[in-house]
Amino acid sequence: MALIELKFFSEALGIQTEAYVVIPQIGNYGEIGVGDSGGRKKYKCLYLLHGLSDDHTIWLRRTSIERYAGKYGICVVMPFAAKSFYTDMKYGMNYYTYIAKELPSRICEFFNVSDRREDNFVAGLSMGGYGALKIALRECDRFCAGAGLSAVTDIAARAKDMSRISLPIFGKECEVDADDDLFALAEKRKNDPNRPRLYLGVGTEDFLYGENQLFKAKLEENGYDLTYRESQGSHTWEFWDEYIQYVLKWMFE
Image 1: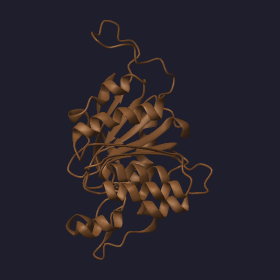
Image 2: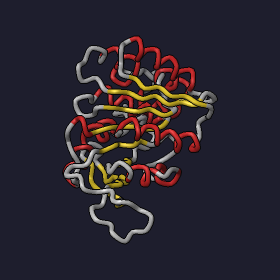
Image 3: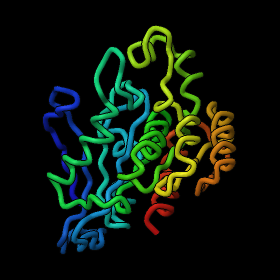
Image 4: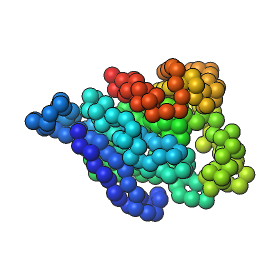
């Protein structure tokens, strides 16, 4: 696997930005402890999103995502999204447009990555779990599946609880549009033939456990292809390092 620190200009953001990209390398004879991870003409791609206090480096620093991805021969893209909740902000930058629309096009431009819906996936944790589920539901013509680990699912409630963070995102009244509300999106997409497969993973001691149960019930009520997993654990990297392996198996096996 190759690790690339990608720096480029984003038209959606209007600034230079960066992402980490892990991608298979065809031909790695002599590399100790690593099997062949290449050979695919066009790679499947996972967009892996960070949480509120982190950045695009965190998945590589806190988990073995490069090694896990190598097992499946996939590309993993880890973008930076600040404290945006993956939203086109009221008083800030257009992070939703950048990550959900512009970035996949750039990745296909720069790398040997497939642009087919069935080859594109999105996942994340906490704030990034919310972002992944929102992107999967809104961009279901581009992404076939989305996974949220310890995801924020009730964004309207969280916006009011975190007013200093949410003010530049949703405005002074913290009003969340339907296209940013996971429950509204789940209702909107329930009869869409391209609605995505979804995965929820959460620890039973996680402070977001309750809202994950409510969203799980909403998805089941609307007949989604949902895989749900819970176990003892809380909002920690020990939990996410374990669960990203379950997500990759669910997506790529």
